[in-house]
Image 1 (cartoon, rainbow, N blue to C red):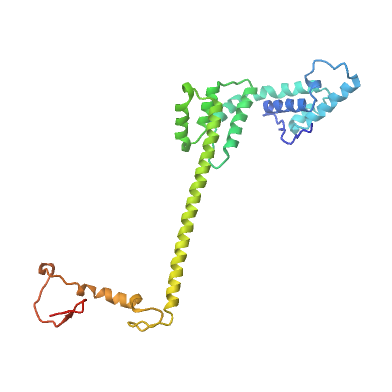
Image 2: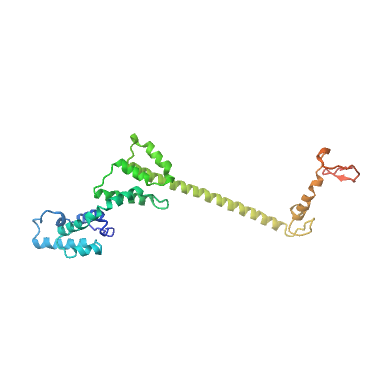
Length: 283
């Protein structure tokens, strides 16, 4: 079976427990694990074959260590001894990382502009590292830690999950599933809102184009028509800006009321004839 080793981590002295788990899996998948983990040589193999396999596996393991680690194991030809030497050198150092990892998982926060799947992977990666170091959490604590990593914008969701948990117990798997479903719902809601905005914007543009088109038609219709009021071409009197302006300024003088008390001053006199809108006249 072809195995992709591109994602294998490099041992740098601070990630021993993560490296150890991945390297062990890789050796087993590639059927190279016996010299490291077997108690003795298989009877089917000769001493020369066994020694060669040890050398081959030592070389393979050294491909996945940093230079500062390589210097300590560069001359080793026994796979089991090499494995134990790495453990002796770096397992004790990584014990100091327990507090760091604990702080990491407690302070971990989901960033709104990142993928929620990546956030879940980061969370699970820290938990797995702590598990390999012997730090175990109850499932409910893991679920609450994951909920705690969500930002304030998820506050209503967090309250809903804790209130709806069976017997008040929140499980990690339940939180993971609910979080992913909520992300899908929010994305769908965001797409719908965006579509509504686009429809509104397009409608506004369409209405604006119609108004501009209407004005353009109006101008085209009266292109050679002369206004009876200002005697300019391009419009008729009812559309004339000058006529509207002057008509507005004298409009108040044409508004008559029969109630004398509405006037601030009143002088009785003969001012001539006033023509009415119904073609009648008054003195």
